[in-house]
Length: 235
Image (tube, rainbow, N blue to C red; front, side, top):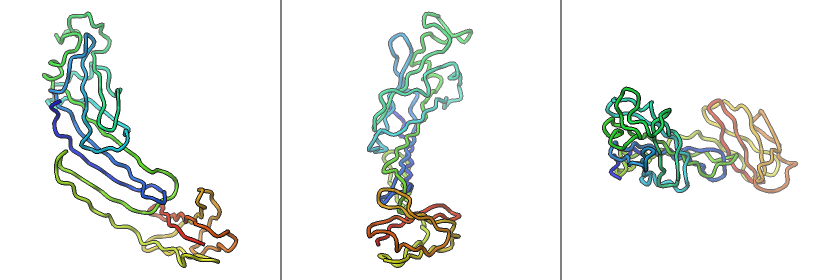
């Protein structure tokens, strides 16, 4: 398949778990030359997403458009349905809608019926796609954000670490109480969870009495006006 090189945007963001949760987003567009005739029913295109390096099968979102503004793709059906999704690609089928395949043309447009790959090519039809892969998603997380971008599928990749708020739990470990210290943010609420994700304590002040908790590992989920963050501590 002679696809245009897809524009890749990989965005790693954080959810809430002890290990960093990440969401990877890959985007791209096919070429009008990629369409293939499918029996006597319509056409299809195989979309190659291998440049995104998804590790699991992502959630794919697709749209159809005409890059030459030649239009008439609204006469078609098949998008946004996808077939055979894998980490490296998927397939989209396309056909004319509301017209039996034995009709010689579509209305007064003179298009061949069934839909043929040449018609899609001449009209500049492409599939624009987005793949969303989420990993390690669960309640509670350490704040960490990274953005990776690439100009095209084979371009240079750069990584930038975004500014993170300074949040501390002190003392850590602690036997009797802990203090949540945040910088340049207004503290709204603190929740204390055990390692099984069970909510044990809730506080609206930064000093929390943990003397009644058994020894072990805990997670403090800290809510501020800018978002929520998690920190681990030990008693």
